[in-house]
Image (cartoon, rainbow, N blue to C red; front, side, top):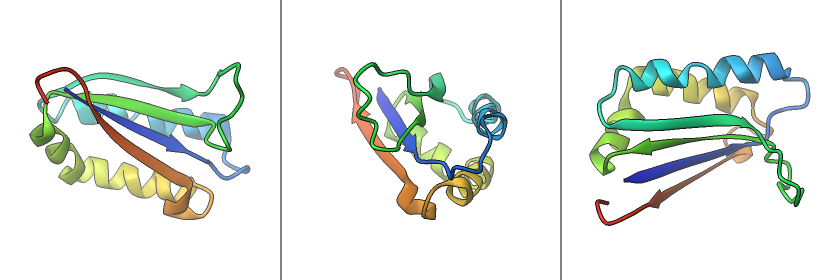
Length: 106
């Protein structure tokens, strides 16, 4: 399994409702791309408070690297990705992506 971790520093003028609407698009993409498992999204509630401005994020679990690639090339993902970049501080500079292989299947 691959855990796709995305952290975002949204521009201050982006309301929480817009952020929630963007994240709400993820399950729709998952329904169209095989190999997608659990999806979690939201605002950080860490008691450590060391997010360094990355206050929102999401994770998507993929069965394997092929499923992640199918997601990355899907037109709905590209559209959502462009919307996230447009809403992030500094565009792409406001987004951090980390892909973590988990377990023995990856």
